[in-house]
Length: 440
Figure 1 (cartoon, one colour):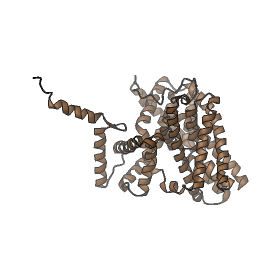
Figure 2: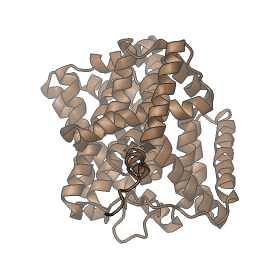
Figure 3: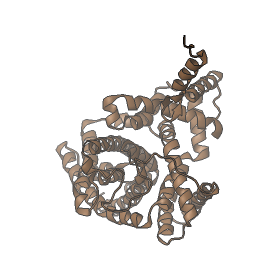
């Protein structure tokens, strides 16, 4: 009689099956240990806010919501993982369902670590340094025409839809459409509110309170639209460049579909590249104190010029590619979850749900996407990618771009999206303030 297989083989087989299952990117055993640790910290009434603990707890929370978002059929098609990680934490905080000690810990960590700008420096500057120089220039210069056309079309449609609901055109233009395309809250809506308040001789906080729901709602629509565009690209591959923006161009090596392991020939190159990215951010913060421009915009401009002038050595380019891919794969959902807890206001978002405002915002964002999609071929660009970049013009800054591009599965286009958001927003705010005094 043949011998029975040893019992340990069955046990190993079961353990291998459990260990092989992942929640997000976390292997199941590690995920379960992380959940137990989180429960123990909450039960003790003290959730540490240091980097080591947050590096475990944030991925556990974010991976849970991402896994749920991926498994709900309809929600999955419109970026469910991003939507849940962005807005469900905000609701849990507002309704006091998330433990206060956990909220306080995440807030403290976010403010002390400046997690968002670390991610933006790694992904935006890293993708610029890692990108082929010719592709970078082509992407930047080619995106301006579709972006300008999309913005003008969205403004026209927004004014028409607002008028159809009885909204006064000046209010629609300056307090709905401009905030949508201002480039986010801190670098767009707040400077806009300060300018409006100085012209109207009123409180800045009152105007910010009016603008904040518009920015939040526009970001929701942009995330959903990006998810829908990605679904369209999967059904109609001829519309999609698979992460590439310009037709026939040697595209960014950080392809959206590339999930392979990046070989590191020199272990020091990612460390040197990471230090270079952070140094560039430090330089941008220093310049911000003397120039009235936000540090992320300064950093974006400096990174582009450094790349154009061929100052970046090949070793740093290689290391920057690794740093960018690491942060994209590991930190995206934890960052979105953190932003949902700390920066996404649930009450203003709910207050924006009036039919007239909602439909006007949705029509504006949808027109950005549609116009970008329609003019893409004439600019020798892929329609899906062009539409997603145009939609980023309605995002809430760097965090909005992360959410939009993640929903659209095009995070490799972060550098071009930042051009759309930061430079597009800067131009929008500048023109709006120049025109505002003539109408109010």
